Length: 446
Image (cartoon, rainbow, N blue to C red; front, side):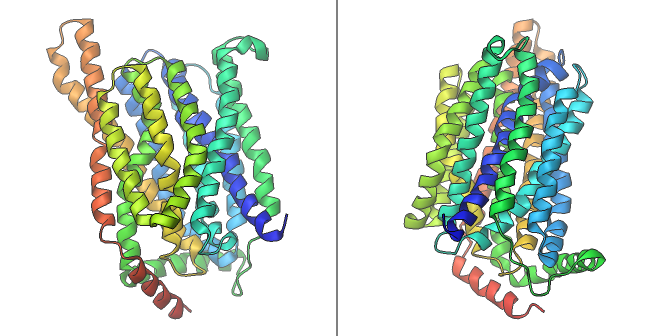
């Protein structure tokens, strides 16, 4: 394998490594285990709000630190070092979920939040390494390859984890609960082991003005402050980030809350897990194909197609009543989820100044994480508000359950507004103007 291909595959393999956390933990077992084990006996809408709070808290912490860390990584040529630190912190916290005892929902949230910080923090620097491993003519394809490998790798381990929970005796385990706890250990080992490929195969170019020690921290903070000054010359970047802020919120919210929503409206957890597996294996080829569609058809058009699909998916989710419909939803999400993520990441690389990727991808991830604060909270607040309004009208347990399901449906339905706002803002993004603005910043950066 030549050096260029090794760089690309080494970079893409980190998505293979960390997607195990996104699938088995964030989207799959944590929401179920949180409801049935760590928060057993709590009202479903209350536990949903607790889970939303955990996701929002983690997102807020990452959002606040992302651009500063990105700027420091640029100045110290330290993107790989930061990726390694956050990746292994996330893997360690994931293993720590094994130790959280039944009913201890507060500790579960704490360890989970720390795991998300590791996962999301590492992604800042993973994204920032993309322009250094792929040229502009191949960046959409390479970005799509990363997401495709993530779906495949995360899906393969998730399939093993699902088998462990469905047939625990064949794995020498006492039951499904023990299988879930050992699944957290398997994710930590998978994440840590495959990250080694990225460490050994991906080179980071050392900047001519690279600094170290206290100097890099001071320079990083200065660069972070300078970014706010640059923004007035980067109106296209600002506009794209605003659009991304809204529509990726909807995407992330559906990823994190879909299983919780399915359980809230009465679906069996095993059916929901199978649906997640379908999403993973549909997502593998779809992310790669969607990236090629962006190259041929135009990246913005392809992103618009995905946003429109998500609006339809959300309405469909509100109205569905059968578990078989959740499988259809899983297929639809798999077709567009990786595509919108991959093309957004590669499109942003066209709009930012060269040599400042860590800093600007820090802002990119910051806004993505601030958006993810809004979505889960929106679902929780809307659901609890509707339940609080309609609850006094219920006279029987059946009516209480029905009102709870109505609250959950309205909660997930509220996500549509985020996709609509994102689509409207994206309409005004001009890529060519963005490139001119970025060139101006490159010329006037010391």
